[in-house]
Structure formats: C-alpha cells, structure tokens
Length: 70
Image (tube, rainbow, N blue to C red; front, side):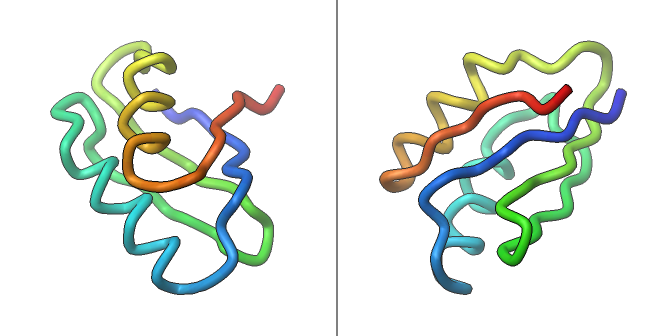
C-alpha cells in the first residue's frame, strides 16, 4: 500500500537522511521516496501503514512532524 505523508521540519539533506534512517527501522516500510522540496514522503508498506509508529520513529530522529495527506 502506498501512502503520502507531509514531513514538517526538514530543511536540508541531513534531515532527509535522518528521516530515511528512521523509516529504515520500520519493518513494514518496504520503500520510500522523500522530497525535501515538497516536504513529503511517499512510503510503500505491506498492508496498512501504522501512522503512529511512523510518526514516533520520525519524531525521535529529530524535530520532525508527520501528518497524512488526503
């Protein structure tokens, strides 16, 4: 399943790397594409994503906020 999320707080390539590292720690996340310019991440998961788990992992990696996009 593909899900697009807004990521607030990313300002540079280092931020993108930190968000990516956080997503790598979530077993259900199979692929992701992070856009610094758009402040978004498109994730692909096995089944429905656990938005709270994603939110917590990404938040722990830095001062980033995640919210689902419609």
